[in-house]
Image 1 (spheres, rainbow, N blue to C red):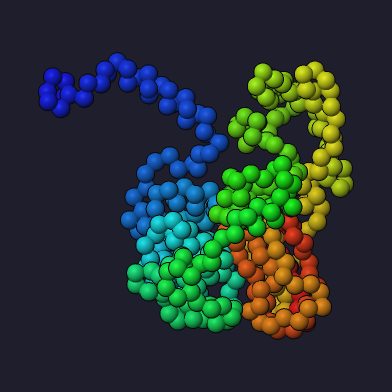
Image 2: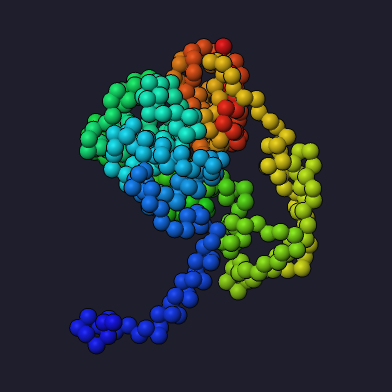
Length: 362
């Protein structure tokens, strides 16, 4: 339509079709990353979830077992936003609202209950950090009395002003030394040190994963995301000029302890490797649910990433007991009562469901 005018782009229309075909094929490569949201949604005017976060939140909800409550999560997002003071929703503040929304759905809480029970609720860590002032001061100020209740009950001091203004200098030399001592000098370079400075928890989790499974960057992305099935065969380049052909022969049924034997071939040479099927091991160990004020349960499904107490310790109500991680969202679990820790029912790395018993206090 613009051809021959002053606004003529000079683009040959016959070449556009090839670009379209190219990007259609590229999208197929990234199908494992699709969220399932394939069209626009008019209810964005109701909940105001930013577009990029919308698909992330949908994926996280599935991982938390809240897929059937997705419409409710969207409603709670709008409610959580008002709880936090109707803040501008950009990274990372939008994540704070999303974390609180999922928490409210998992705990069946409304806005009034969140405000009334703020001293004792196990808020996601991102919410506590926001209220402390770690990502700055929102334009309308912090919501009160919610902020005071959360900080005072946890003995946390608020950050005054811009957080970066009082942030101490980062000691890269010391960090590099500690990382090399922990993971080995040959596995740490300048990029690793910077990654750890920016995302310490994510970096540590990755290194622990790498220590178990080795270097996986050579694996094709689709193979990493979708494991092979029996009789599947794949070929890829391990190093420049070195290609391998891997064929999965068989996987034995699990033993009582969850162990299976995987048989596969690498360039025709047969290998047998014992592996632990975590899902089977977990199915054999059903956890007791928490009941009563002296039993602290998990607020939602996740993985225990930190334990702050042991049996015999004396704790006060609101004191941190453990940290739960679920899809980038960390939640500090507080003591529901003061007393002595009678029993710790979990270990670091354990997967738990909602209401599973974590700590018993007497």
